[in-house]
Image (cartoon, rainbow, N blue to C red; front, top):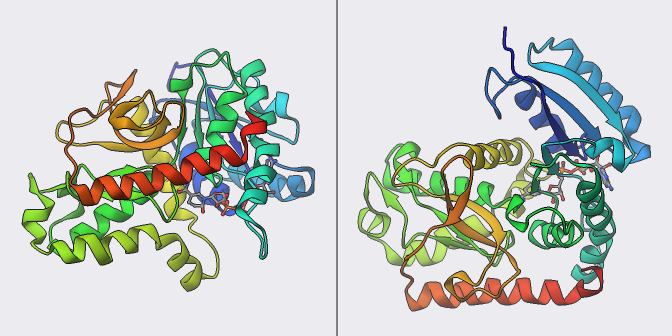
Length: 328
Ligand code: NAX
């Protein structure tokens, strides 16, 4: 029997596909540990509350020893009240004919109020991970609407891209995926992201040396990671869910556990001007954690090819910020 007090975890969009593939793993202790009781605070829109009740019933039916309570709600204050983790998954997907600017503004209407509610009601140590797309800019909106919460507590999810990159490099080299390290995702979680193979390692050696095929790295590797989300939709008929949930759990673990020596974790964090990235952008960087605080990996070198790619993704994030500037 554990004696720890329960940690409150809020997950939004909890009746959606990522919610369904993530909540059971969180409740079984895979995210915060097998001795950490939790309370799940599940937020949905009114129209999905009935489906959410079904998810809550199934969580009950698993009889998870660590799951102390489940709160289901469509009310922001109730959802974020005293929470330590705000996992912002729910958002409005892009519909046919919708301009990117409309998508950004529609989601701004979700992430602005959620940011305010986190600011006013969350626990003093709250940390926020945004998954709902466009996740970097949604995170920027939530962060800006939560001025009392330190900006360093906000993260947008680029971990799925890192995991995709690691898997690809492992397959291509024949090495086990556990030997692939330091795959940093730079910039936006979108088709402009730069999965940095130049600083990646396989079995402790530079990935470029092990792979020995620069054309593949700059071409197919890059494109496959950038467009993997679309490839999953084409194959499965709906977007990545289990892999996204797994990456969400990996993201939280990479924040609360010290990073292993010789490794990085990809997270989109607030830029303070590192590597010339404009201040304030929520930008994908390679990060290391000591278990309580994190910092961006320093001193990485980039070729002109990489610099050009990083510029493209930076410009996209600047354009997104411009589109929603009235929400900040
Ligand atoms: P679903 O459409 O299955 O679920 C989304 C849920 O959010 C729905 O149940 C909906 O009712 C709810 N919702 C909508 N507005 C809400 C609001 N204001 N408050 C609370 N709940 C709300 O989508 P799912 O497949 O779960 O994906 C969720 C989000 O993750 C999407 O925006 C998707 O684009 C994004 N993704 C992000 C990834 C990343 O790597 N950052 C990868 C996977 C995924 O594409």
